[in-house]
Image (cartoon, rainbow, N blue to C red; front, side, top):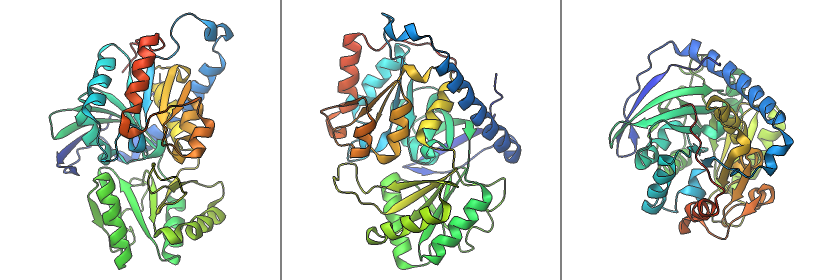
Length: 361
């Protein structure tokens, strides 16, 4: 059995702002342990998948026993909220013993208001596009108890090079550590973009004047790095980062809106080279003793491609990007504004293709 992190973090919310963090053990030691655990869990999950008997697919028992949900553009509506109907139905499924998991590009602090909205104990959350895995339990309407299960942050040397290249291109970087989001804004358009991202996610940005020098240590690595830039500059910035890093980092193209049909965006996400939402889902499932083949996943974005591909059934929203639709097993005729997730799950429950799974949490 893999050793897991014993980090205990209390997220206190005032509106959507993270107020404090309490960590009960040495962060440097924990980061090393959880990164190794993540890689080990991936190997375990892959081995388990290969050992699945061929006859399992033809079993008469329902195939899907857990639900993994992207947030923006999928579970959340265009107001970035979980509808009452969705929250009520997901609680109903959880009460039946069907695990609900979040899998999002958002950083941990910006997921907490949605954890509170669901009011589900030990809600598994894969955040930062697969770089972190958390167990989240609401304490009250303003705070959440969090246990970190795994973490694979951006390596230190890659982080330094990202900051240097962004500075050379005249763009700003956001740095994610613990419950905080930091930005090295120095120009008017930097602050405008930071405020735009804050409005989108609810994060409380801390502005740094030292290019993150105080954070660039092995114990304070960022779960992901965001390079924010104007839309008309993004293609140029993307090309520069792809040429610089090639396979040394995972680079995700940030889209403006899941309902926008054109390709566009105003930020890049830089991750550890072995991290994406698919590997994050696999690691979380291994820790929870859930076969990823028994997971039905819902997504809409380009960062959901691996996530939808590794799940037992990948479902793309009507409003999904074409890249997500191409890899999905099913494209549903409903958008995130039409409660597409729960309408599909209700049909699956009625058809008997969802079954309770009492897993180890």
